[in-house]
Amino acid sequence: MRGFGDIVEDIRRKPYDLLDASKTVFDRDFLERCRKLISLFTTVQHFSLLAQVPHPPAAPVQHAPSLNFV
Image 1 (cartoon, rainbow, N blue to C red):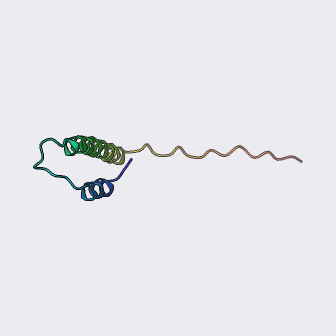
Image 2 (cartoon, rainbow, N blue to C red; image 1 turned 60 degrees about the vertical axis):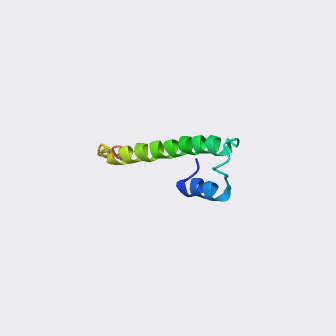
Image 3 (tube, one colour; image 1 turned 90 degrees about the horizontal axis):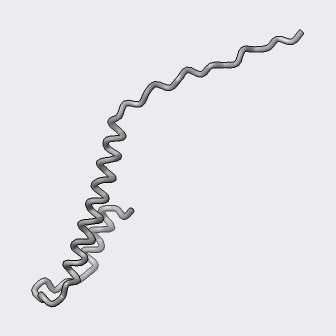
């Protein structure tokens, strides 16, 4: 999964001619970036929800009874 900084860098790296309607590269790249941002947002949301879930307390450790051999 790419991070937000990688997505922004990708936008800065590609030059687009927004006034040339015959070029659809921007439209395709825009849709792909939206997909990546939604995926990133979903991952962050999932992580955030997991962090809020209270975890059950750990079970106490039970030691085996000691065996005394005489």
